[in-house]
Amino acid sequence: MAKSKFEYVRDFEADDTVLPNCWIVVRLDGRNFHRFSEQHEFKKPNDDRALHLMTKCAQTVMQELEDIAIAYGQSDEYSFVFKKKSRWFKRRASKFMTHVVSQFSSSYVFYWKDYFKDQQLLYPPGFDGRIVLYPSNQNLKDYLSWRQADCHINNLYNTVFWMLVQRGGLTPVQAQERLRGTLAGDKNEILFSEFNINYNNEPLMYRKGTVLIWQKINEVITKKIKVPKEDEEKEVEVTRTKTKVVPLHCDIIGDQFWEEYPEVLAEDS
Ligand code: DGT
Ligand code: MG
Ligand code: MG
Ligand code: MG
Ligand code: MG
Image (cartoon, rainbow, N blue to C red; front, top):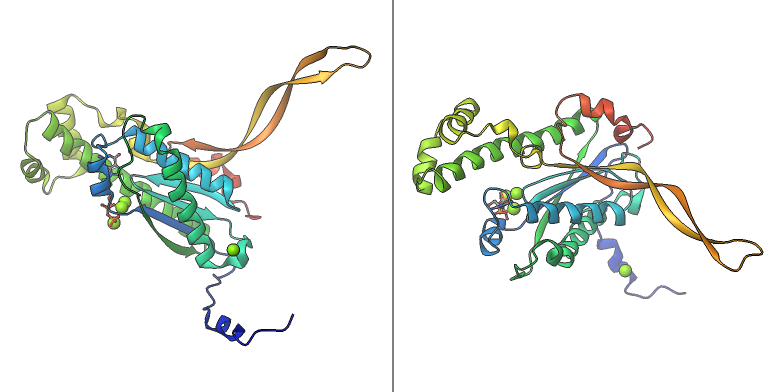
């Protein structure tokens, strides 16, 4: 077909192909979730419904899109790591970022009612996205460690802060004053001596966030088969191996996780 005289406008499109052989990380974050969490009465400091919904959306993203090796989430954010060798959409940055963010956002609305039973969704939430390339495995591990360290620091602070307010009777301003300049050890001590809470016994999902990886799962299903020369169908159990996205709440800063799941960073990735 002959080209129209309008075709030249294509030349204005910028090339946003990302470098080869780099891990491609897309991180999304809820837009103004300070307000969103207040309006939807999220439990403080951690709301299981909200955290589980975030993870459901991230699982959907991993299943629907191509080449995601691992994802990590906490609070109102999730990071998705695409394989180094991915050729998805010819490695165009805008494709990666927009597909991740739109699939996640529509899933958030779609699955909302499954997690927030009697809490109505009051307005459409939005998410921002950014893309960062990491050339080495160490860079990628350090990136993920940075997000998990952020989760730890924020969660420790928020746990003490809301204890001081909810059980200690302090105003938010007083609680903030009380915590000014305190170190992690001081915060652990306040939790322990004033509220009888050992921070290390707080739920792992709150302290470590959520890691999503692919795992082979054996599924036992019952199948109906027709037996030759018999009228009735017979039920038999068959085992199938499926690859599923599995959530973990574990440390990813140390070496143990990477030794246990070497396939995440495997060279053919
Ligand atoms: P942004 O990202 O610049 O548009 O603004 P925000 O307000 O989303 O700020 P951000 O992302 O730094 O902080 C996340 C907010 O989401 C923070 O105000 C706390 C809230 N949030 C996230 N998860 C929970 C939760 O489980 N419970 C409660 N109560 N709040 C949460
Ligand atoms: Mg922010
Ligand atoms: Mg946010
Ligand atoms: Mg955030
Ligand atoms: Mg189209």
